Image (cartoon, rainbow, N blue to C red; front, side, top):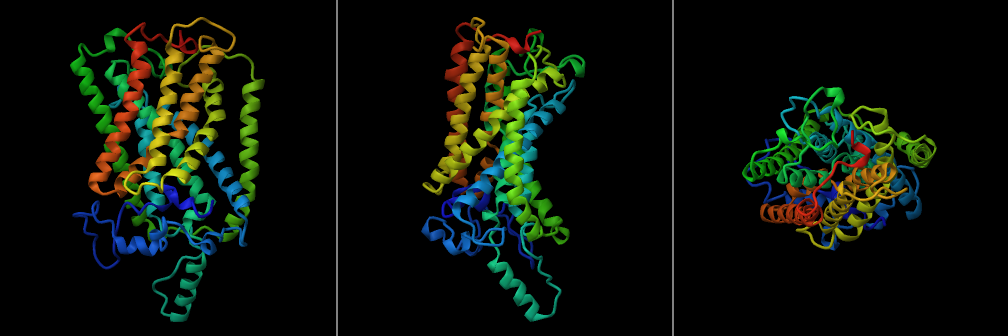
Length: 440
């Protein structure tokens, strides 16, 4: 596993911004020329499938040569814990940004922008995961040489479980490609949620009233384009803004102590296991939920949100291992991220159709309250963490211009067509209904 971890685009992609300490960066054609010399220095084994030498990859923050098994456990624990944080924050941001008079009704936009911004910061940062920050003003050549030796012998940040957890785990779970594509399709069929009424009475899941819908299909087409360009454009802006912020605060950014990372790795195993067990116990032990679907109601956060947390580690870990196995197969087309985004969108389409179909009520089916909440948990938890926008825009910024357009267009078109088949066939045949767990 240590040899294939560099297949993760979050941990090996070139920094979004390329600068030189002597002169400003020339951004004229940086998308076509990604500074090959710096990339070869950062990844000396790029000619061998972009893999890290075993002796380098075996260095971990624990201070000794840990086995691949322990390293895998550390990374899985970080991914599990940070998937909880990313999912909770994404749902909270969606609720906070859905209010009367909001300039943009697609609430997942700001979660995607925020996650992309954090991804840009972590990708550009050069100090957080250094054992000791070099002092360029130190005239002592021997001291500087010692610092360089320490830096060269320290583990690269792409092998540090905390860095993988923050990028692949938190940023990947904070952003959601499947929800973004769902909003594009809902704009097409004129069914985007609209924040009308008092803020405390709003619901992200209620069907918009007829008076809030566009008068014709032409307006829906414009809405679809607005969601598409707004989501992609602002997510890319967030990525570069985070990278610029990392450059600005670089002189004051501290380095995480090695002792802190040594303690965090085993501690994260306990936190991840206890958190997942606690969420499952809450789902089982809490009494039956009501049907209040307003954004800050206790029923919403004790029902669908808890189910989302149950499924979120599964989606995050699936995306992680897909990237490990598939991203290195095509340098110009990150296959692992593509498969994760498309597969997650297809699962969301199936869950959305089951939840909004007119089916009979049964004990555990989609027509029951529990079944409806489980389906919402699958969409927000599993699909939300299986798909990612932060990694996607980072890959777009790192590919050549032609490859980036091809990769981005194919990702959006294939995922969108999947929802047209899954949700559209239901919408244009028998129609969509308000889910039973969100019905007033």
